[in-house]
Image (cartoon, rainbow, N blue to C red; front, top):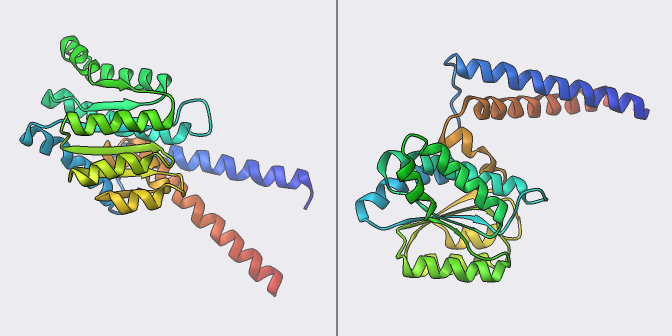
Length: 248
């Protein structure tokens, strides 16, 4: 197969994918919401805000040691999607989560998420800003700061969604030792065993990228998720058809 033919096939698949996203997004907006498989990590996140209010203890969200504009952008944006949900909850309840990160750009995005959620109450938005903590750009220094937050603030729940490395062991160990409700997720395969061993619920790999669909039920996110699943089935059928063609 020539390079030109490869490009034609790639363009066809890309165009089909874009059409699928548009089609399924419109269906969701019209009320045809598909049933998504249950992911326990997101169900647990939905309950931590209420538990934080009941116990009077803070909720901590970590956006990880990744940044924006590099290979860790997707994981950091996944953590910000979780923050969008928690920010909306805090606008209703008046209890803001403590948000920590190691990247200054991620801090600006976090502030914008809180600003958007508290657009009707500038005073509450100003109070929420004080819960955003840029700790340090170095992973070990950031982990030390999070360990301090979990210990001194006596956090009720610890949600960690983003990019993490070996420093996760330090933070996860503190959360497990203090018996804090702990939900963690990352796409880094080297860190997932640490999360699975220490967290109450684990978001495995690409599961962190569907936070907008599962937590906020955004039509564009749900439509994109269904479009991706449809494209996977089409690719499987094309591969299967190719195998049959070559075999017969």
